[in-house]
Length: 232
Length: 232
DNA sequence: CTATCTTTGTGTAATAATTACACTAAGAGA
DNA sequence: TCTCTTAGTGTAATTATTACACAAAGATAG
Image 1 (tube, rainbow over the protein chains, first blue to last red):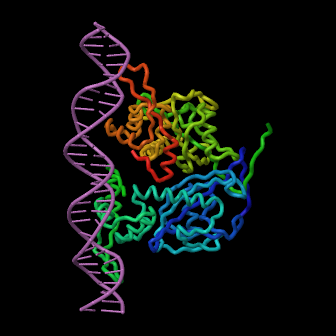
Image 2: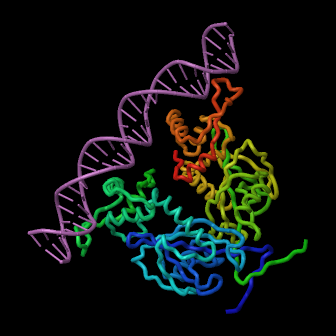
Image 3: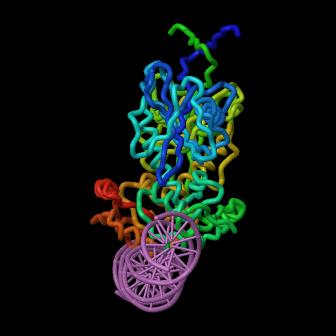
């Protein structure tokens, strides 16, 4: 492939995306980080990120890089914030559009891809020091997740399609960092009429088996169009 | 000034900012638009926007362009969303970081600046057709404003430092597109303890004069740090 | 100077939402 | 069959939200 260059009348910042990937496991919120293979921040942990191609949207870029570097595909992402401080990348001026992803950990194989030494889930309360300004991005993503999870049913992206009410409660407790009364939680979440109780129960548990439920996306879509607000 | 050019190994999108400017007057929410002097969209109404200089943050860029094109300075802005669709600008690939601004209309002189034929306030319910994808940006900004105004005291940016409770109520009614009960509104907003009643009343009104109030930013800061949530 | 007009400023009762709280049922394993 | 663990359930007390009407102020017009 022949090398070519691109010339403009004015200097342009490079444009990149970075992605904060949330998972949920063992009652804990986790973050997927990658260990960099190259400078800068070689062998340090960072968010997966990379440069935006001139023929893709930032959304497409975030999804592509997620797959290239971690093996994740078809995940739920939302734009978070655009970071444009002048020295956030030591190489040159890079403006980063950040995203957060909510991933069902069990559903995917994690693979260290291009430019990455390794990929690993970290508990949110035990993160390593991150390269670039990624600590700041993670902080903002957490705040956003906490705010959003209360009035939009996005938490379900972190669980299996079928889940028990206790799993769902633990998820909310982990994200919101509170404890929730079991009876009140069930009353409220079932009262919205958005969970469907399945005929199936947990298996291989050494105690009373819980029913599985699934989130009814179709009904939610209808209701939210007619002004209904999901609110926990 | 000699012309020079900038060369990179990979093609880069141009980076710009666009700003949705909200004002409030005569009980109505308004938007400040500019009429473009040049192609594309010559003589059409658009949001004030322009390209990011390689030595400024997008925040700085939005503030600079606001001043250059409309004369507004020192205004409250917040980042909204980054738009990166491939054909949003007919000239070339432009990624735009959008902002919204809340402006006290009375406090500033509006001046048509660089590249602008004229600048004008439009009622939010009677906007002209906008150039680029700016209609979409305005729609998102409105949604964001509606959501945010309920749990952050940002509405005050649209009013004078001293305002009457009726003015404040009308502001909320305009943004949220509802009507609010006067007594319940006052009970709630005064109950938060964030408004200070001044010794001054309205003047030159042909009816009972209302007391002026001001928002106590200092107390709000303290309270919000200790977990208090403004919520209307 | 009196009557009229407009808007301010105020309280209470009815209803709805949220919180606090404890025991039985199921089922695996010892 | 006993023990252990978690599932699943209702009610009363408290708090928040809603609905609603009239006297007081002050300018203006006659």
